[in-house]
Every structure is written in C-alpha cells, then in structure tokens.
Image 1 (spheres, rainbow, N blue to C red):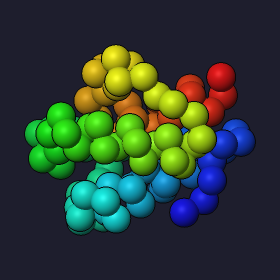
Image 2: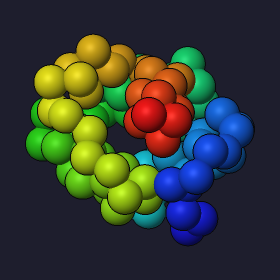
Image 3: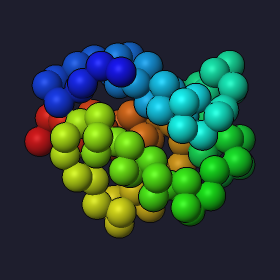
Image 4: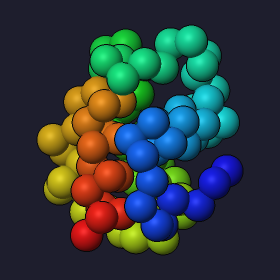
Amino acid sequence: MRDISSPFSREEIFVSVKSILVEHFELEEEAITMDARLYEDLDLDSIDAVDMIVELKRMTGKSMEPEAFKQVRTVADVVAAVLKLVNE
C-alpha cells in the first residue's frame, strides 16, 4: 500500500481506502464506490469504524479523532476526511 502522508489526489486516496476495505474487512472491490454507505451498503459497524481509524493512521501517519469520524457516512466522506487530514 502506498504511503499518502504527502499530498495526493482524491483518486489516489480512494484507491488506498478501497484497499483497506478489501484487505481488512473482506469486502468485494466492486461494492466499494464513492457513494457506498459504510453501515448500510458495506455492513460495517462501530467496531469496524475504530479499526478503520487505526488503518487510516497507519496509512497517513496521522491520528484521526474518533469524534470527527462520527460524521463519516460514505466512502466519499472517508476520502474527504483523509484528504483534509493529510493537507493539515
């Protein structure tokens, strides 16, 4: 997996997030779109959200506050949150 601690495009972040979802949550790659809802479409739960935060920290080298992640509902939201995090 590519380290995205330096500025990357939205598409590159999406590819990295998709990779996390496939590798760590055993999701089908085809199911992961920008519009996919984490809880309803991808069947993730709150424990999965915490695991995702841990993986995003590994990917970016930066901590994401669990409170900020509560606003995340779709894969696009995750990508936007990572984009914001790496550009801070």
